[in-house]
Amino acid sequence: MSQLTQDYDHRDALLVVDMQNDFCPGGALAVAGGDALVPGINAEMDAAQRAGALVVASRDWHPVDHASFAHRGGPWPVHCVQDTPGAAFHADLALPETTIRVSKATAFDRDAYSAFDDTGLGDYLRERGIERVTVCGLALDVCVKATTLDALREGFATRLLEDLSAAVDPDAIEECRDTLADAGAELCR
Ligand code: VGL
Ligand code: ZN
Image 1 (cartoon, protein in one colour):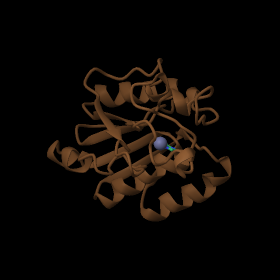
Image 2: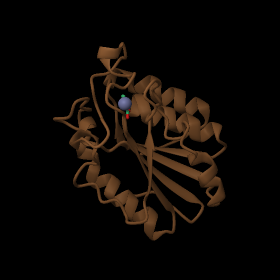
Image 3: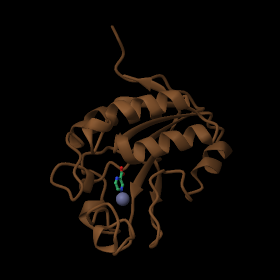
Image 4: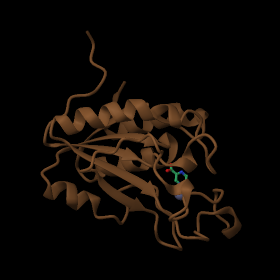
């Protein structure tokens, strides 16, 4: 029988990117199929935690009037404003109690797509003896892509869980896969 989750051990971190209401259908910056990832990601987090891996969950966590919002000249509608329901993790996301939570893009004047950008996550993972990072979540063509590329730059072996990620722009998926594979990520299904 084929297994449905990846292999993990204590040198692994599973990094769940931005599984927040605003990126799910009905949200301010909805990704088609975003909410449908939740059961699979829950199973993956369970497998990772049981195997002694670290589970990390990032959230997009913008101040009111953030620089990335359209009314300030940015590319995005208002989304993931700190302490609003849209910024909360999806209600069915079963984060283990020991999940390391990382807030990103918190600076008022500048956007940040990667969970490694100005968060200290790279040093933290190295201190914990992590050698490999497995990335899933939202959105494939924005924050998952940037996070995966940064994980590689930070020197971690890096896997992308393709079936547990969805894109804002479905036309960008092919380019995304190529870019990540060329950079050295292992694409897993
Ligand atoms: C994201 C657009 C704007 C993401 C965050 O999490 O992929 N996308 N901010
Ligand atoms: Zn954002």
